[in-house]
Image (cartoon, rainbow, N blue to C red; front, side, top):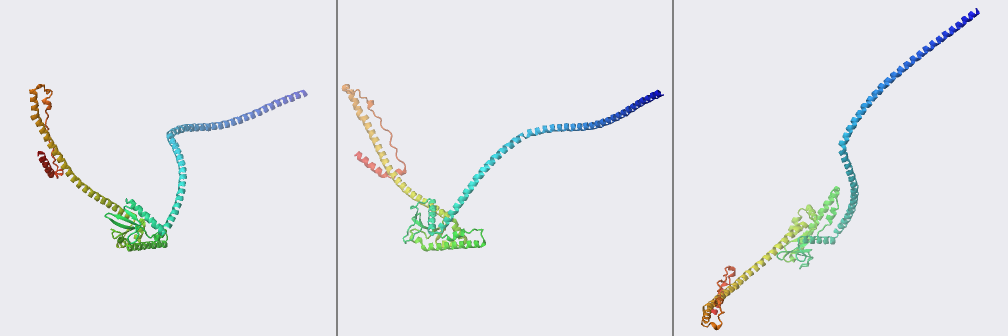
Length: 418
């Protein structure tokens, strides 16, 4: 029993072991199947993920391919555009170079302009100083008179007149008066010119700006009115000097010379009756342009006077030449008469030679051939007469002394015949 039981127990144990092993193997197989299922599920998930990634990758690859194609197309179009824009790029490069040159020139010109502006500022300052000194000098009566005399001389010389020939300066008249200039007129006439003009009020008015305040403008207007009054008073002073009474051949007129056109224009603007007043007092207000026109007319009159004198001298010379032509005609007529008488005498001599002498020579030769006259050829002794006669004068200018010459010729013929 014990062995059987031990066998049974052993078999049971073995069976239990087999069953346990089988169970264990079934459990391991189930776990393995479960693991395999999990592994398959994980692989399926991985496969699905890989497929999705592959799809995404394929999509990206397609997009990259399309993008690459687009890039190639764009690159080709860009290359074409660059080829088309190559001349434009070259032109832009040239423009850039030109702009660089212009910028450099601009910098240089800006420097030169700055230098010229500084020089202009210095010159303006110098001009202001000179203007101030000139204005100060013009306020001096003696300096202003000298300036007026110089301007007057320049205008007269510009008209073509010569000093001490056509005009004289600082001439003392018979009454002791001294006009600034005496201009000689054709026909021995003269006219006095005065160049002293009051300018103090005018210079003070020019220092006030036209666009200044109303009070300053009124002051400027009053100064110009004072200038016109001073010029009117100067006209009266010139009229009271009566230069024309002490200058021989002078018209009742004296010329008041103003060195600048603005002096007369300002005075006439403030006093419109100034010119009429000056004319009524035998004073002619003359600016440089007016005086130059007057002097040009005088210069023309001088030339006409000279032409008249030259024409008169030419007429006298022509008359003398005409009379001399008559005398020459008489001498030519005498010479013709002498030639005619000489031709007649020559022809008489030839006739005597041929009719008187040669026949005697021939007779002598015929009577005595041994006299040595054989060499004398009668043909060699024959001389042809002169048939031409002097041409008789026919011009009336050369025949005005013909009658007395003919009488002289007839007297000569009578004396010759005697």
